[in-house]
Amino acid sequence: MKNSFLLTLLAGLICGLGPGAPCLLANTPTMPITPPITAPASVISTPTSATPAPATSSHVTPGPFAIDDPMRLLVIFFASVLTNNIALAYFIGMCAFLALSKNTKVAFGMGAAVTFVTGLTAMANWLLNHFVLVPLGLESFQFLVFILTIATIVQFLELFIDRYFPPLYEAFGIFLPLITVNCTVLGTSLFMVLRQYRFWEATVFSFATGLGWMLAILLLAGLRHHLPFCRPPRYLGEIGTALLLAGLMAMAFNGFSGMVKL
Amino acid sequence: MSLTNTQAWKVFAEGLWKNNPIFIMVLGICSSLAVTTFVKNAFVMYLGVAFATVFTSAIVAAIRKRIPATYRMLVFMMITSTLVIVFDRLLKLTLPAVSKEMGPYVGLIITNCIVMGRSEAFAMSNTPWLSALDGLGVSTGYGLVLLAIAVLREVFGMGTLLGTPVMPGGYQRCGLLISAPGAFLCLTVLLFLANFIREARGEGKK
Image 1 (cartoon, each protein chain N blue to C red):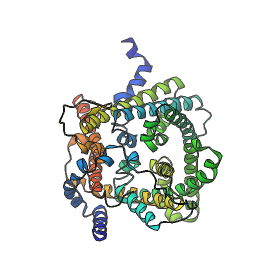
Image 2 (cartoon, rainbow over the protein chains, first blue to last red; image 1 turned 45 degrees about the horizontal axis):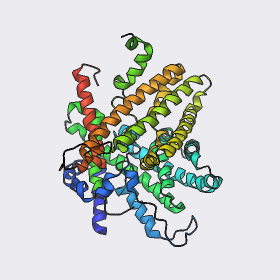
Image 3 (cartoon, helix red, strand yellow; image 1 turned 90 degrees about the vertical axis):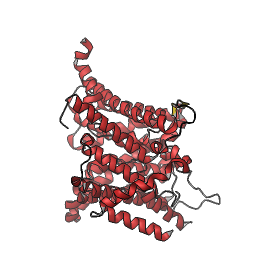
Image 4 (tube, one colour; image 1 turned 180 degrees about the vertical axis):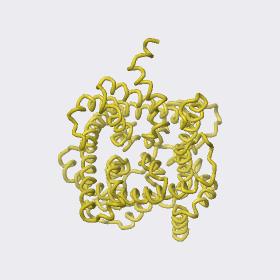
């Protein structure tokens, strides 16, 4: 199982990074056979309700920073990158996903920026939520507080990178303001609260989610890079074609399901 | 006749088809794919987005001269998130089951590009009344697409409509439509049809 997993991951990466993109397209039609009848419970309900209740262990609950089960971190990591990919299974971050996937370089820049910001903001939001909002009974203000944290962190990050890492700013700077309104960032924070992750779980989850989003946008950019060589139906337009490709990718990612259970 | 000639109607109708947020502007795709497995959820989502868009637009238009240009995004976002909190509370109170099913997507109305897009593009330079109408038009255009996708997915994917079975007995459910890829494919098909109709009617060259 381990080998096949590594192979599929490798294949996915190679396909997304350029030359091999068409091979992913060629392979996809065989994959979606699994979903219809075999897994109705997880497929029929909306994605959010499909995620099982957070596995709060039945024994004495350890502190919020404890890691009592390192394997679980690994499971969360692979689940958020592959089986529960935030873009392809939860449709979060679609606007940027479709708009910025025209070339791999831009896609990579956006993906890296999103990964970084998602991870940082989710950690900050977790701390805020756990030590300020919950003790004060202010959970209803989560949305407002989270979005403010995100906006602030993005602003700081922009200044910080501009000041200390000018080359990095050249590469990623233009993407940072866009990220405040990217649903991936807020969505990750909201998922983290809904699933009641503990601190390290939330950290792993948020970085892995960002990575998953980056993988998805890179793959899509790789595919779109090859579009000039084929002729999609005229009425689909550019966005329609991208959506169709995303759908095929979602089928391919469906093939990962069952590998790890979140 | 007289109604359809007023400026208010024009502003409203613009969002329905000519400036449809999903087909033309390609905004708000996240929620249109995620909550459309059931017609009920799609409708609730439409209500949420309409509520947020109409009031955000109106408020932004009312205070547009006092919003500093540099921080306008932040101001928009705070207005929207306050409204979304109100909507979320109302939803939890009236329809707890639906609220649970929608999960994080209610909160994600905040980052729904439609809300901010309308504030930025319309409300910043128009009166509150017109901005509210524009918000209503755009969100209704969005809601109609949402409902179309949801009907497609629920009727053919589950064989039900609003929870009641509508397909003849022995209908084999199309599980693909309910799953994630099905959402993409549904929207692709609708986009195709919209572009086709648009071109057939000789509108726009896009």
